[in-house]
Image (cartoon, rainbow, N blue to C red; front, side, top):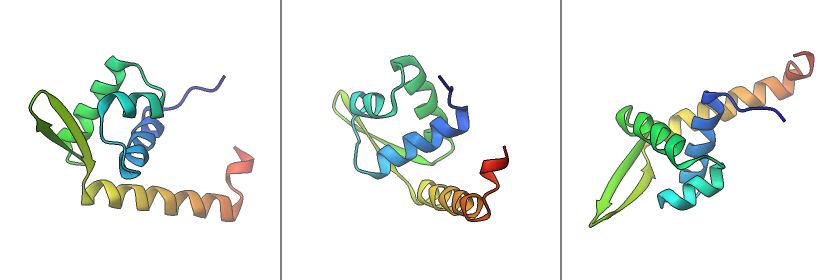
Length: 91
C-alpha cells in the first residue's frame, strides 16, 4: 500500500470540494481521511485561503476559493506535462 504525501492529500481535498462536496463528513469519506487529519488539513487550507469556511448555525460548509482553483489548475497542468514527457515512468 502506497501512502499519499501531505501535498497529495491537499490536492485530493481541493478536488473533492471543487466537485461540490461541502459537508465535512462527506469530505472525510471522499478523501479517505480520519476526522482529526481532515480538520488539520482543512484548517491549513482555510488559513492559507485555498478554501472558505462558512458557518450555518452549528454546521460548517467548505467552498473552494479562486486561489484554490488556481492551485488545482497549476497542479493539473504540471501533471499533464509529466505524463506528456513520460518523466513519471522513470521515477
